[in-house]
Length: 220
Image (cartoon, rainbow, N blue to C red):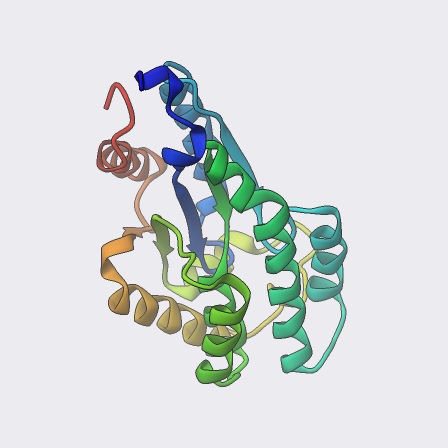
């Protein structure tokens, strides 16, 4: 069998996620990251699917509005997050990976552990059960965590736009979110790259260039 005749499913794509507390700056870099990936993968005929959570599908986007704007019980909030994630996996992520495409998602399950677990105080055991049920063994191949002091993040967000219900949370809430992110990164260090988000945009871009080499992107 020649290289060109290898079935796409035999050469799965890669799944990369961006994580961090609100105001850490990940959204500033994710679009540039996707553009660079697309340029590098075009030469080998691979596509890049850029997506986000909550969201990623029509149902997911409807759930996103509820989760970000409506007050609700913390378990309801977590269940909605995982319901949207299941749709995201079935309709977007898994089909793309099976085609051999790459997927870059602005947030995934680590965010649920950080926000609903660390921030809201929902049982980590309950979240772990949902994680296994909804996604099985699927985890990102690489997670880029933008780590930042919550006080700096809050200053960056001040006046940027009308805040959603999470962005209106206290500094103590975001401290707990950050701690849970770092706990997850410590437990699964092999898939995490932790970036000091207090650095300049240029310095962070330099670190991300090293990530491309780690992923085996052509030309890096």
